Image 1: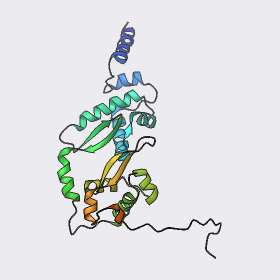
Image 2 (image 1 turned 60 degrees about the horizontal axis):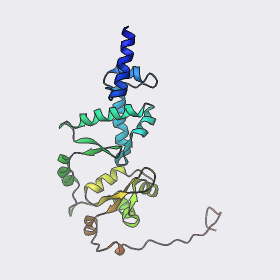
Image 3 (image 1 turned 135 degrees about the vertical axis):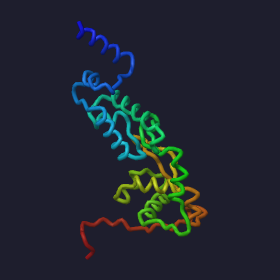
Image 4 (image 1 turned 90 degrees about the vertical axis):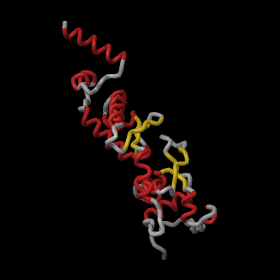
Length: 217
């Protein structure tokens, strides 16, 4: 009798409202295969959100990575969003069109601007200059395209340049996943004493000669 009552209650929960996955026994009953304990699953999701950066993570992508149902991912993300609303955290999880990403809270922004603010004594690293040059010449451009040109990850550098107000988000590409597009800002133009991007030096032209030789003769 108790087993029959349990099955009826389980059916009501799954059909009428989101499952409260904080209850391990209920979660195991619903997802007997591939079950990951709630705390571990949330830790993995946090790590994935950190890795993907501005590109964000969809529930479908997370579900495939963890090999758990998409509905469970959404519930876990909801719980994490509530967790990061607490004032003890300087970041939060935003959900834009089904894509989750970490964002710094508004209270952090003025301090970030002070941290990365350009001054007369501040110099940009070679990596920063290379990234800025790529964006200036190729804008609007995605993070992946920048990384393909430079051959290294660009997520953290883009965050720093954006915090310094040298680049900004200009929209989203029509490519699969609709990645973020970047462009330079008026602050960039002022910093490099440019009135127009047309004042940038022309890129060298290379002859496209096909040859099977590894070295010039």
